[in-house]
Image (cartoon, rainbow, N blue to C red; front, side):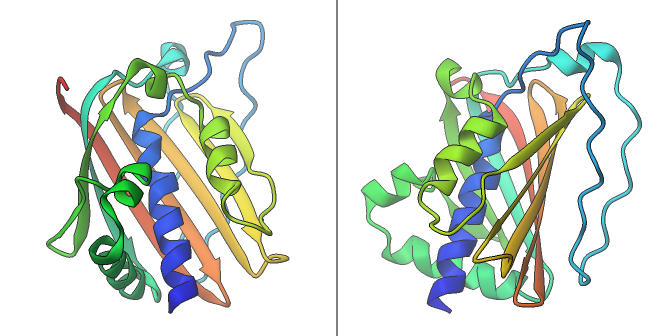
Length: 203
């Protein structure tokens, strides 16, 4: 349970942190390569692919300001992970919560709800840089494989010689709204985490 809690909190931090993550701009001479569909754990089917976005969507960025993220966890490990995060929120120090972007987090209606102020610097970070930063604190994990396709980005990494793997897809609906879906498989058990983020005002 303790190991699961640590992984669950790390996964939530990675996913929720994406609401302050922008995409690298694509140049017209170098169109983004199509990302391969992310494999899903047996417990959770992969979502249907979204229609191809307009060319202008490739340059979308996250708008700085006050953002709210709502995280829903499902699958065999979903409830267990949510309980783990809830316990972690009770035991983490204010400094630990702030470092994990969980200082304004709460469990509401079976979902994790949190708010944070996205600065211009945070909005300029890419999925690759965010993933690399988070994986440094997760020993035994492979480097993140990030791909871009229009207004979507996908990422895959594994830990412990493949004993735990994660596939993630971020969809940038607009500069003020995005959705991040991750599918984690650990020891044959699956968990799907969906983080819906939106800008709610200025900081």
